[in-house]
Structure formats: structure tokens, C-alpha cells
View 1: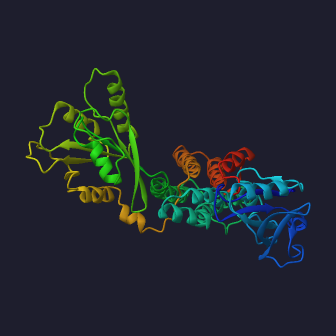
View 2 (view 1 turned 60 degrees about the vertical axis):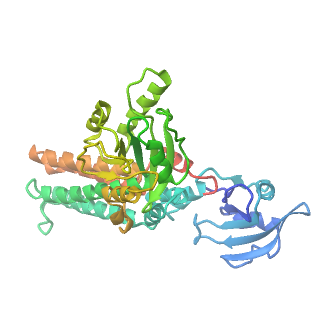
View 3 (view 1 turned 90 degrees about the horizontal axis):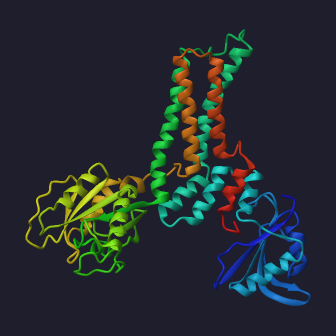
Length: 448
């Protein structure tokens, strides 16, 4: 933390500009001798200056240099950002020159790690920075921004405040029983307080289901027997020829993937091999993979032929998916109907005229309540790490409630209650292990 670090903050490749970020106590003094322009040691904070990076009288690049003085910076340290011409050669050369001055190359995520260690961001906010960088949809962007702004952390801190007040009352009862003005915590009146905490934690977990859905997207398996139009449906939904389509049954022998966005949610569609009995070794591998996707998918679209009667294979597949979230798509509705199906989520159409495709996407939107999600405030948890910590905190509160029924003394209940408080503290970084930081920030890109 005492040394000065640098890294390329923009994606490497050909572009208009590249940005190299330098952070640390010596950031300005190390860059100043390399800059032919204004004296960076004397310029006001948060100003941009035109000039050249020069080494041994050789002009390395024409640049714009931004100077930002501590503490009002991303890391709270002095920061210099050098805007070079885009491209691999000029960017690498300027970076190379910086490293000759004793500035160290930053580790992945080290700028954000310093922001956390210096109190600029808490751990939940820091984690969301990478989510924002990785965001692919507008909802993912909004979700990450709300986490960075501290709205999720505020919810966690609110619950910790409730717990700390309860713990303080218990401590006073134990250490200063003569204080009659303090609320007496007993086995009779502690359950309502624990249930209040439990309800708040459960609310966070309920909301987190939406957060996970936004962050991870929805996996959709398109299944059915051979030659019912699964690949045609995939191509129609993706609006591209992703899968090979022929009249020959069994053309698709492996999983083919494609992705679209609906109401800000990413949907990953999987076109599977036709599910049927086969003696062909390769085809059987494809069928086994198709069956495996039934357990992995968040949504199953079961495709049936309108002009074919249901087969035992169709009925078997319908049994396998009846308790899963699924839509039955009756394809080729332009042909005479030979099918008799009564399914709650059923859409009829065909992939030639695109009849029913809009109805199918609307059904998907309805099943996952995407309209409500896209209009929500998105002040919710999405990180697997945070969700696991909330679940562990909930277990501790449940243990405390269970111990109340066993007449365990209140001071012993405080052990589980304190553990819940500590676990929630790990979410925001009030308590953490160095190993956790190493793992968390190693997932960041180099210049962030």
C-alpha cells in the first residue's frame, strides 16, 4: 500500500485512446519528470494537461495527462491518468517508461482493493464494480450501480443495527442488572425481535432470486423428439441461422447455444438433440446430453408437431418436465392437426410464417414476471458470496430461536446472534480475511 502502482485501464487493441492509470503517494512526482508540458507538481487538482511523454530526450507519445490529488480520487491516493494514442505499441511503450521509474505494475483489481482498504468503498460496493464492468444488459448495469452506490449495503447495515441494539440490551441486562430503565430481555420477549431479524433476512433472500436472475440470465432448453422443428425455433428466436436445419431426423447431435435479451434479461437458448431411442452411439450421446439439460435449465420449451399424434416418447418427456417450469410449443400449426394436448402454458405457431413466436416470447415474459423486474428499483443482492453469508446468518438466527424453545439462557443465545452480526459484517467488509480479498480482487481486470 506504500508503493506506487500503474496499469493500462483500457482494453488493449487498436482504438482512439488508451488510458494508463498511476496511483500512490509518488504518482505525481514520478510522472512529472517524464512529462514535457506544465509542471505537474504545481498544477491544480483534477485538471488535464496537454504535452508529451519524453524519455532520454525521445518523444514517446503525444498525451493528455490528468492530475487528481488525494483524497478525492478513486483510491483516495494521488492519481495520474495518461491518455495516450490508442494501439498496442504506444500504450506499451508509455507503460514501459513508467516502470523504469520504480512504479510497480498493479495486480488485477488492485486499484479497487486500495479503494476498499482506504475506506472509499465497502466490500459489497467493491465487488459490484466488476459486475458493472461485466454487465451486458441495462438491468445488469442498474443492478451493479445500485450496489456500488451503497443501497444494498444500507440494507445490510440496517439489519446489523437491529442486531447490535439487541446485543447491547442483552449485555446491559447481564452486566448491569440494576439499570431498570433498560429493556429486560427474556426468553418471552426475545422471539419477536429475532423474528423481525429473520423476516428482514428472508426479504433479502427473496429479492436475491431476482438479482441472480438478472446477473446470471435464464437458461432455456428446447427439447422434443427429432425433426419437430427445435433448430428452426432456435434460429427464429435468435434471428440468425445458428443451427443446421434439414428434413433429416437427427441432424442436431450436440447442444447448440445462442443468446437473446428480453426485457433486460439474458436468455441462453440450448437447442438439444432429438430425444428418442437410438442404437447410434454418437446420436445416443446427444440424447443423453439433452436429458441432462432438463435438470440444468431454468425453462424448458417442449416442441411438438401439430400434424403428428403423441408418441410414447412425447408422453415420457411430458412426464419428466411436468414439475419444471416449461412451455409447450405446438409447431407447424399450418398443417392439419392430429394432436390433442391440454397444457397450462401452451403456444401454437410455426417457424415459417413466424405465427406464434411473439406469443411465445410474451409467455416467457409472463412466466418470469419480467415486466415487474424491469420496472423495479433493483436495490437487491445478486452476489453468490453475499447470498451465502445471508443464508448463514439466517441459520444462526434460527438456531437462536430453536434454543429459546429449549430454555437456553439469554446470554447463551447471544452467541448465535453475535455470529449473525459478524457474518453480515463480512458482506460489507467490517470483518474479512486477507485470503478473501486476494480471491475477490483477482477476478478483476488489471487496470481496475
